[in-house]
Image 1 (tube, rainbow, N blue to C red):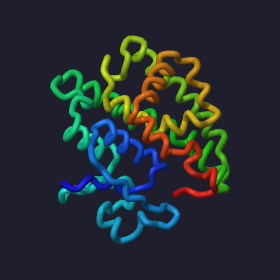
Image 2: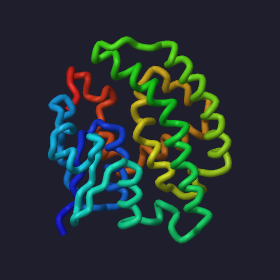
Image 3: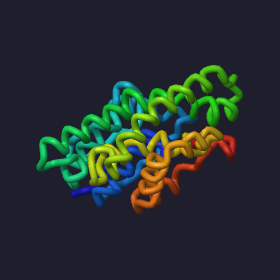
Image 4: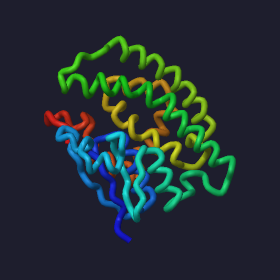
Length: 222
């Protein structure tokens, strides 16, 4: 069978979620690079893959998928279901809980910090410092919940690494490149958890293709 094709740009946090899952699964895949500045995601051939004009997109064997969490779950179901807590209703339920916490609580708080601290300065947009400050305060309250969870469990779904942990990598990676990364110092269990994630070979490989400035350090985004 031909390798899975993943369309997008490697610096994307959403792409990173899929790539880490592929690496964890040991799946054979091909990264098909696209240009955001070139508008590749708005071209008819890409809109045929994803009518919303977004990345990443996964293609193989006649199947086309979009939405990063859906893609990642499919990859893991196929190649490494243990990372979804397969075999235990309780463990799979806890994986689902923390994947949703990331989607509905953490990512919406991290995104304005990352956008304002990394992207906006490089593209000449105004930095909304008020929004950043507000988001950092929300993050501190949210990290209290994570600290409590990780003080009694090594990982978010329990004492086993899972997609619940890996899905957090995408935006946390860029947040930790901002001046506000020091916030984690007040949450030792969260900081230890993050350090453990960074030590994983899959994360090391993917992070090598994710410059901390989204590629803007060279004045461009691929």
